[in-house]
Length: 138
Ligand code: AMP
Ligand code: ZN
Image 1: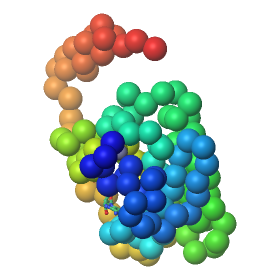
Image 2: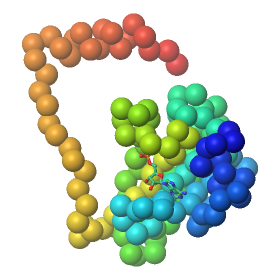
Image 3: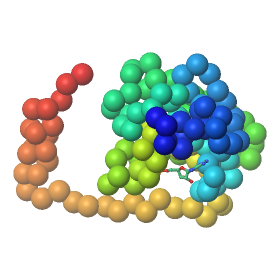
Image 4: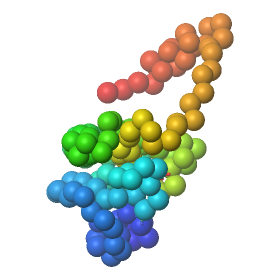
């Protein structure tokens, strides 16, 4: 897609610090990292949503993302990593081209996800599961 910043990185029209590339995906350092090493893994085709991505791209995206996380742990600079994907504007997606965040972690890095802990009321769980089952397809 011509005005997509990540497609431009795939096409070498704008620079990026690339860590890995194959026929389906590209990995490069995030320009504004949560931790040093924060990497984005993207498909080499333009899709906004992971749900619209062909299965072989989805599989490669996960496989390469976990290998990049494992590689950072192997450097012995990190103890673990987060894989994080924002799907949709309401979920925090800013760049409308699928991207997995790989965030290398160490206990002292000072970053905390802003989790909260809600509670279900009465039959909310049953209603939720019923609606989910009505719509689920493989
Ligand atoms: P998201 O909020 O999930 O859409 O994340 C978009 C990410 O893309 C942010 O973490 C940005 O720092 C990153 N980003 C935006 N432009 C670039 C770029 N040119 N090179 C590397 N990372 C970028
Ligand atoms: Zn794109």
